[in-house]
Image 1: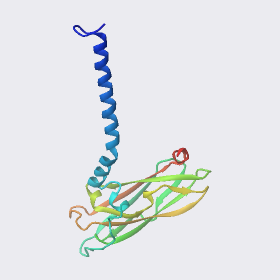
Image 2: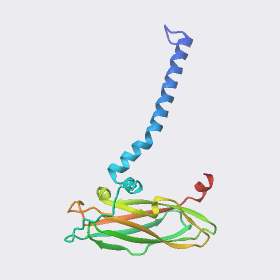
Image 3: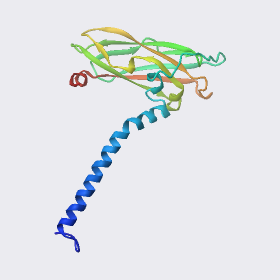
Image 4: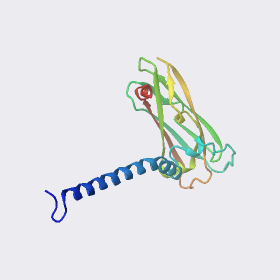
Amino acid sequence: MAPRGRSRGSANRGLIRGLLLMTAASFAFGWALVPLYSVFCRFTGIGNAEAREGRVTAAENIDPNREVTVEFVADPASVGSFDFRPRVGSLRIHPGKLYDAEFFAKNLSGGDSVAQAVPSISPSSAARYFHKTECFCFSPQKFRVGEARDLKVRFIVDPQLPVNLDRLTLSYSLYDTTQTAAQR
């Protein structure tokens, strides 16, 4: 039954207008997510958008009077699919200097696989000072059955890192994305 004072046709037109408005707003929100995510990544330092865009340079402004410990952690999120671990547990570094670290990965899945690493920096407040210039996490990694190899990450810790931060953790979760890659 139509609301008092309105005909059924008028109520239906209002409902259709509302649904169309909601559809348009959802489309606009979805369209805006990519640039919003890019701004979010740039602000928080997650994903290192600057490195992927080639804006981080390897110009070194080394702080020789300061040392920071960078710990490396690896998590094979797809249980049983990969052996995944850092080659070294930690490095003592000087902010501003370019460093390399390696992670070992071996395909244990019994078939060809594709893996994607997702990085994380702890504490999160340090993420904006940790710049990866080259990283295996920037693109999916293809592995043949039983293939093992070292995966390299190249990074600089900004000398502007707050002095109260003397220990950072670079952590990667490695996901088996073979099924997702096959659907593309």
